[in-house]
Length: 592
Image (cartoon, rainbow, N blue to C red; front, top):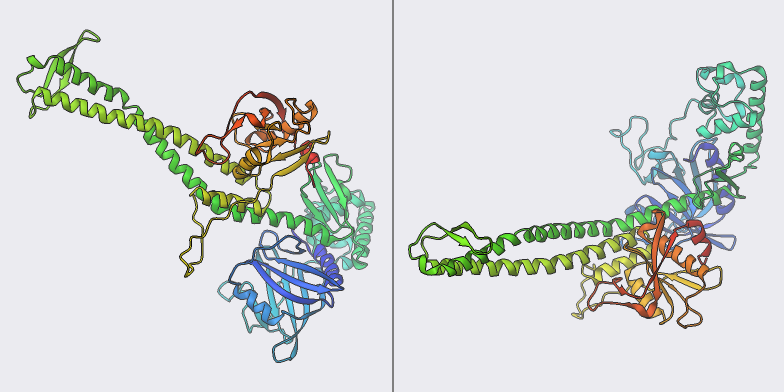
């Protein structure tokens, strides 16, 4: 859910405890809507990330490596100048508005100290990051808003800062049950949401659940007892908010690892639902970091892979177009063979064809029927026969070339589809980078390099070898390739002769290797073999197809044709196992 005023108040309190008296050591902008403050305080360093993505604005801690642009954004340079090296005096919010303020003491190049405030507005699509001076004048903002864009308020340098327009709602401390009468035509949960400042719709439902009132019931039909219970529930939550004794929770659906929702209050209404798991956290910042960090990771992967995806799609389109052209040329084979027949019949009847004509009728001795043969009246019969033989020879050469080209085009299409599958399965930015290097090596992408005075050729970097590691329940090591280059190294460099090699049948997927401890012509135990087959099915196009066939053999039975694309192999003396890609079972086997 988006951050509401209640959650922002909780977040600001935790940020104040973390950031107060911390120094801003450096400032980065990995993207045009994300600012990262490197802060140091209490003998600890943190990367405080301010996301201004309209769909999910927020402040969280970052733990992974950042890819910063070579040339910093102008707003990043502004922040470095005006708050870089400053000390955070306090972090706070006003009432239940979705605005967090950082008071910063900054010393400039002339050793003059001034107080500045960094204002983080977490207001959905209108979110913004603004820096004001001690006189409340805007120094600059991430997004400028002039009078033509908004008649409500102006966000431009030198303008006076004004808070976002307030909603016509009441603070939770001041709300009485009679205030709901204005929205008596609405459901009870909606009436609470529309009355209490800084709350999300889920807040109204949680209040109703704690009070034992049906949240869909119309507010005008509330009994005195229900009003009393609702008032008590609101007072209880108001006390929690005032004392900052929040109970942050995360919501997981169907026991999946990815968090689906979060809130700063315990959502007790979900506790008795079997398909939903509620996990409590000590810190709301931890919950939000986990939630938005995963969302940010998926977004970054999508952004980074988009370029490669477009190039792959374009190449696949070209291959499809060529395939259609070559396949259409095969349909002319009968016509080409007819040219040979015409030439043969003309040569067989050469003594009879002394007169030049536009066509002749001759007996086809293969079918014993008369056929019409078009002739060029400007040439004699012999030259017409030679012309037909020439057309036949040219047509058959084109036919043979098309057969070979179709075979090569199908291989190329298969390779590009395997790269696309690997790209869609990427878990980290390094996985995408490895695929980019593979694409450059295969000539599908050009490497951007700065021109140097030296004429020496710069060799293309090779992708890192980082197979995904698993351990079977019986202690056998299992490895799965992340991409085609990984697959080649895993099968022909890493594995030994009697290791077990697995791959999904007739689909794109990872090569999987089970290290055979004995190194004899004896397969690993059936349980390990089944688990390895599940890993192969999981890392393939067939992971959502139910039961699939996975081929397995010894690594020595896998051969790579000369000159073939990465990941392409031939294998023999194999067996097949039928398994289902059980995600939970596979993830339990994975090395942490």
